Length: 215
Image (cartoon, rainbow, N blue to C red; front, side, top):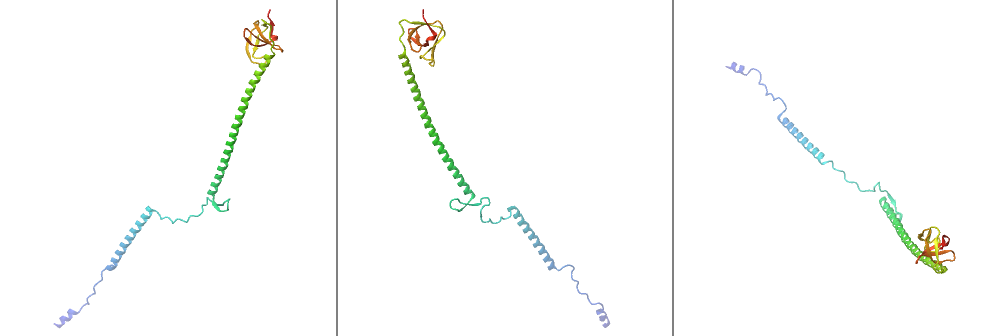
């Protein structure tokens, strides 16, 4: 019996339990959490980039306004104070407008003076015409005074075609033309050779050298 117990306890001792292959469960859980976190971070980053593209990059804060390079600061002609070139241009335009206004006023005054002078010339012309009319009437009166009374029943015959004039001079206007051979009655004569002729009524004056005594 004893031999049998010893034989039952003899033999190789029992092997320890073999650990499972692969990483432990806590490490696998940590890896899964890390993967989930990386995926979430990627989603958040992608969303931020999308919003940045759609909305646009935020603009930089505006810089404080400074003097414009296109409007240099110039010195004022009055007191030496600095002013932009635009104000200098405005002053120049105002000065030009003032000069043009003064020029227009001067031209207007000259036009008024010219109109007054023209009115004076017209008045002088009217006076000259009136004086000429008076002189012509006085000359006609003098010619009539110089006329000699013809003999009663005196007649003349036109030697050739003659002009019968309004006054006894070659510058007087022609009233009509007397054909050759016309018998005319003498109404008056002048000392310088003009004869006032007509029928029962005087027509005008004819130079005596163009007339012959009626037979």
